[in-house]
Image 1: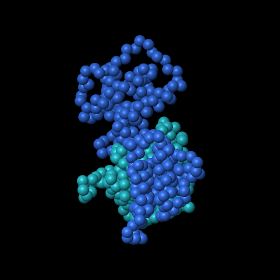
Image 2: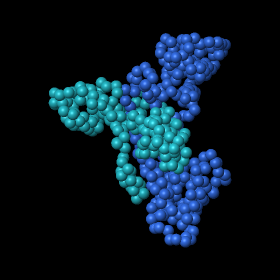
Image 3: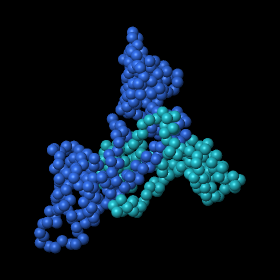
Image 4: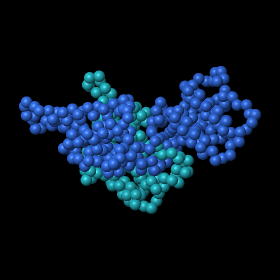
Length: 179
Length: 267
């Protein structure tokens, strides 16, 4: 079983419609210690990443899923007949990154961070389910509090919110840009 | 109604990177390209190669006002925030210039708050760059899960599309079809009522319609247009719902579960 662990994980991820979580892997393979699963998973990911094949396994919202590599976008798009490439608007993305880094956060706080009214941007993000309302702040007016969603993670190909560069890493990037 | 994802290309990729070409003096960039006053300030700071921790307020205020002044009139709806920042800059400048009876405490720099805000904002801008890159990469990778999505249920992550999305899809299709020689078929009586009933009948039989496939299956432009308007009418009447299973995927039209059983009247 042990030496078959990697291909076993491969089979499980292949057959799963939703991203397969480590918890689910452990459930299916109860005799294998989780650390071993984690190690085999990393090896499997690396093997795909380094291969010449068009597919790889990517983390997504807490699980793992097969995906095509970016360079094969054109033929896939043609097959699926999807021409347009939608993107978030600049203001929506700015508001979203303010939410991501300051969550839970109110509309007024986001407006203060950006220096502009952000109600429309937040509305757009809510509509797209990239953010959600998680409650009210214990402050005058009891304003709504916003957080990013699972869909936010999936949309940007993140496994967890911690996968975003930390404040320190951003600072480093900032200095590189300025320098 | 909003187009949730702005189809227009992001302005200069929303960031410090995007404004870099402006660092040679000589031309003004339209105010509209800035997300807000902080964005404009950061741009000026970068252009003048100013240390953000030690902003010469007089210089930056002059530069900033020049940008605002280059406009013939200010659109208060969109640009009130730019004016607010101008007022703040002038206020800070006055705080620095005013003679004081007591010497100011050295750590109470009137610029402090603005600098903190700028640094915070700059961090968000960098994060925007990171997210934009990831978005770009994600839009080029595909998963099978998305293609075999099951029937829409309440808790699924579906996007009910707006009128604009529908119209956009429709016109994109018409544009593609432009090349094909469209003939107007004469003498065919087309009524909205009939068409709507036809759509409902198809939906009852088949669960869903692929929006573009269905419209594209019509022989004439006239008929396709009619079908399009009928679909809009049905959506408005809340008899059907147009749904995108995921961003970037084709739009499907479903019969609403809570729809009244028969369509009353004709139009």
